[in-house]
Length: 486
Figure (cartoon, rainbow, N blue to C red):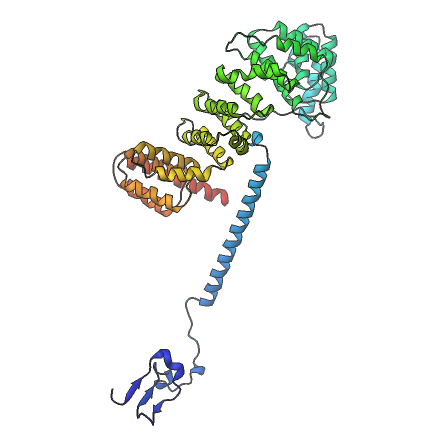
């Protein structure tokens, strides 16, 4: 335009004069033009127009919600740290115990447990019954009877009644049952121990095994008490002599020699003969014998050298009893990372646990292996190895990595995206099956996972059916979560 110079908006602050420049003869214009050019009203008199959404309120609400989320996340993190700190302080033996811990005998209060107190009084009265069968049932240490021993009570009335029965009853069977009940309740008077020795010598077969198990459990409770709380065991030399008679050189599948040797170790931690004998079961014993021997050697004697750790690895690799594999994993966590590293077994333990994450038919064992991996601070290392195995050319290696991630969980979104891509493009149907099952096992509510499963359902064949099952599992898990929070 002739005689007119346009000023860009970025330099509006520098333009303060509108009109003709006398030096150059150009007319200056303010861009963009002011509203007063088209309207004669004063801008200050115009009322603000109503909005459907109050932008100020929305902004404040967003800020508040973000602040609340940050505070909730911080609280969850603090709670998780406290829980993990408490978890580490607690003994692994208690947290990871396969068998439920036995309730120790305790006193029964008549006001707090009136029904149990009435049952106790009835059983004490039955000990003086003229009928021998009633007296036997009152003191019988068997889970099929609601007896004094099964009530797990160490009230003075109970102990006194059982001790009186042991000394005065005419029936030898009643005296035997009273002696067993007193030993289980932790009563180690000379008459009780001598009677128990006589009963053990006269017993055979299943009855002998049960009595040795009861004696072993009672001595474990006695040995794990502090020195000032332990009661003195009378006739201890005779008890030791009787237990040594079961330590024979002939090997068998019998559990009596193992339990007898365990009792000797509980009675004396420095008994070298008993320690050598029970260590021999780590190499050539059955799964049941090795399980009991490892419990004594690792947990009680705390011998955590290379040979013992190798025995633990062999036990949870080869034992046909899944409970024994679980117990071996528990003992491995009890040994701890420092002892494993000191024995030079870190890499061997890592490889064994990595294999156990996928190569076990029992899900409980695989999950316990994942828990032990976490307790031994090996989780990050295993995650890195699994991520590399997902890119392997062998389909079996990729499938095992997917199963392991189903136990350990996913480390990050990168691995999740990799699994989603593998569902679509992996050439192995076995691997795709395992990925879909992993999504269901981990209860992943990610929209990408659901979208992928819905796309799988549109097809036909076994993959579509597997995706349908996975979607049902995810929906059920989501429904349970909603109902539990509401």
